[in-house]
Amino acid sequence: MEIKLTVNGKEVTVGIEFARNIVSDIPDGKEYYGVLHEFALSKVAAIRAEVAYKRCMSQETVELLLQDTNIEVLSRIVTSECAKEYITDKDIDHIIAKNSEDAIENIISYMDDYENINQVQTIEKIMKLENEYLLLKLADNWNTPKSVLKKLKDHKDPDVSKAARKSLDDC
Image (cartoon, rainbow, N blue to C red; front, side, top):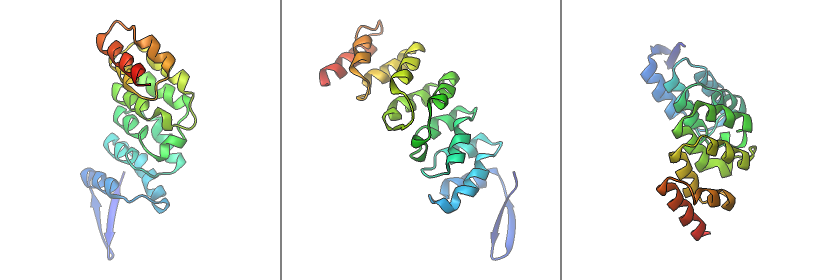
């Protein structure tokens, strides 16, 4: 990827760190969708992760980043405001298959905001991982259905069961 900065006709080629800083400083707005998409195509995961952290990008860019193989990119894109309306069950499956605690924890935290997923199926998939840390996050999440909390209250991990009981008591 070649990135050039032009100021008053003076042009300079910039390096990867400068490019990463540029991405983080691009303001939100439709007029920047094209350039953000170009950065999302970068071979450098750190640049793609900066794009994924943006609040505003095109649907095409969101869909591209949701299929990324880098865990940091996936962890960030699932928290993006604009991505929440495009995330699908297929995207969730892709991310869960990566088995990244950070990305899946973010899914648990933002799941209620996703417009196009089946939350019950997503929770079931997360529970099948049998990862106590993620189960604890489910038990602590105030959006977790009571039926799930009832299952978790008898979990063998004391922290998971305690959190589930507390969440049930708070309902």
